Length: 584
Image 1 (cartoon, rainbow, N blue to C red):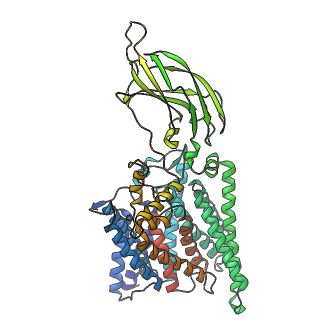
Image 2 (spheres, one colour):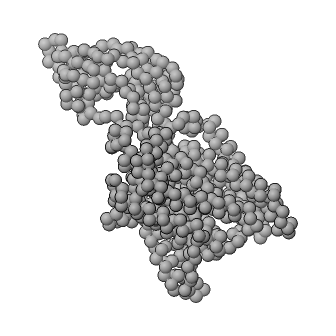
Image 3 (cartoon, rainbow, N blue to C red):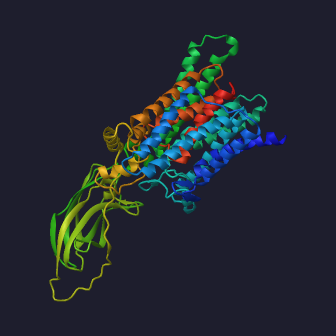
């Protein structure tokens, strides 16, 4: 192999390394200059870009251009910059987000230049699978161990949880990113199994063993999707698999070309494989529903906030002497999904906090176990002993239910009961020595809005700025003020890919992007079921379709692990069409 041949392999190796590293982006950038921050993933991306440019110049390789509908991304890119320039607030953030999205488009075009042979596509796909399987393995180890791994703080701020349950997160920033990565790369495992099953040069025993191994990997991958507790994840896998299975079967049924191509039989076989993937995913979902209480809760409720709903009836006012104890009647109604067990781990208890109205300091917390398990919808009345603080003054006694070491219910529901208490000096002349330890009082956090609220806010924001929107990635910084709390969680988007583009970029940006996306879908469907259709091209199509389906409920383009994955798949699809008719 001469120098030119060796040099031509470097871009593929760099792109494969980039594909592998997508789940493992460091939480803190390696360095930052102004708006530009460089992480390990972006460093590999820059290296891939540089190596590819040098290779193309050195080997005098002609550039390859995508299909004409990609030209719609030109006005889209211009709208990205204009929306940032005219954003009402946070222009710098909008510019930064625009640059990140444009780098993704650049990756798609870069992939088109690099992937020129059948083996190039295989190698990049194997890089994606290797990174995904390693990330999934780490996440499953953590989830089954019921303990957060400290060293994973290198890649994320914290593990994602639902109540006391750890949602499979692995090295991803958030569990939904892990779910999306699994959905988009699982089809490559199916394509690999198909290639092994059709291999005539491999001994039968080895082929069967390898097929069994790949089947186990698919089961693990699907189980990881279920363990993310993302209902859209396994639903998307099933829906996309059924879509491909049905489309291939219909194409086979109406095909009337020469029999020597034998395509209808091949399509029917591929259709059966996709149907099997849908059935396997459905089976795994059913098994988890029967065996996992956490998964059952997640599936039966809109989100975990619906687990933590309590209605409390408490006295409106009390007057107590310092350090005096009194019996109080409290009625609690379980309006959530959890069973209130006070003897379970972690226990669910009735709790209260004393907060001095003048100093705003907390004067201790109290806990009372429920006399029996309280089922959803049930009411329990308790006669409990309340002891006043040792220091006279005006207090607020905040009542709530608490899942110990997990959360106060009010942090999830926004509901809390309060009793105004007047604490008078002690009844005797003996001075009472303060015994409780005080600390700064805290306020309940504002619950994260559900999708209906976020979509309504997004629609309202778009109506106010219909042409250029509010700037890309600015919704998460502005929605809190609309709800009366500008300090709300600033990692929340509209949770809808298409609405996010509309509210961020207005009609001038959303229309060209949606036209490009529509043309991409038409392109996928037109080529699925043609003579040269292979399982590998179907795998790339399935990955892209997974993004489009899941995009109705989430937004992924601004996270490198998923955003770059989308553009990498778009580049692979375009390269597959340009390079060869048969990828198998």
